[in-house]
Amino acid sequence: MKIAVVTGASSGLGREFVRQLALLEKQLDEIWVIARRRERLEALRPSSPVPLRVLPLDLTAEGAVDRLEDALAAARPEVRVLVCAAGFGRMGSYQQVPRQQSAAMIRLNCQAAVEVTQACLPWMMAGGRILEICSTAAFQPFPYLNVYAATKAFLYRYSRALARELRPRRITVTAVCPYWVKDTEFIPTARQGSGEQAVRHFPFASLSRRVVARALLDSRRGRAVSTPGPVCTVHRAAAHCLPAGVLMDVWELLRKA
Image 1 (cartoon, rainbow, N blue to C red):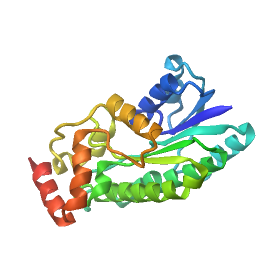
Image 2: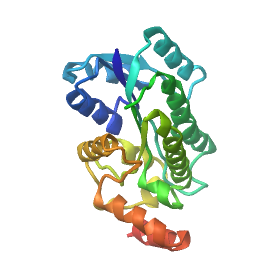
Image 3: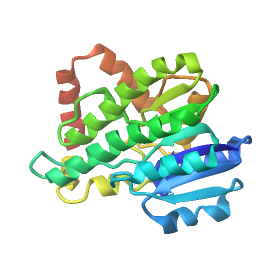
């Protein structure tokens, strides 16, 4: 049995990955969808031409990834595609984001992504593909988005190194680094509390269907990094040329605009 595994599948980019994988990846027998909210996962079934296996897991909870490992061991599938899309952010100064939320971002955006990846890797063969959903925030420090950006920098570096390690197995790893995506829950969720004033505008924000389509195309082409849009592509190039201090100065101007 050949499957795809998608975390964060109940909303946003994760949900769009499920939709496009079901349409484009003809070899899949099942898509395993993972998120906290069972009812949202169940709601995906009618629109998917590929059978879904619903795994309602809070990936930050103790033992959640153990349950995924147990399910994989029982089914013994070939994982053809893994998409780690679970994650969230909070905007605001260090005083405005509670330490509990900062810790939760680290657990979900970093620890859970690594654990899920390691749980799936024994079930992947040559030609398998991993997409780690990072962010353009991975390319520089971001004041007032500091912990979120740091988690994505971690995931970006992890993805790049893992891609090199998996070359002999012919498994590709793609770090997907989008700019703001306007038709997901990320921006309103991240702005809860004092974040409304931290970042005032989100110009040139992308659409989830375009981000996912480009990310899957880049994954199929074996690219180590996907910048699915012009802003994140320019940002990645600028991060190679400009000091972090200059990039943070530019960010200060943009977030206050």
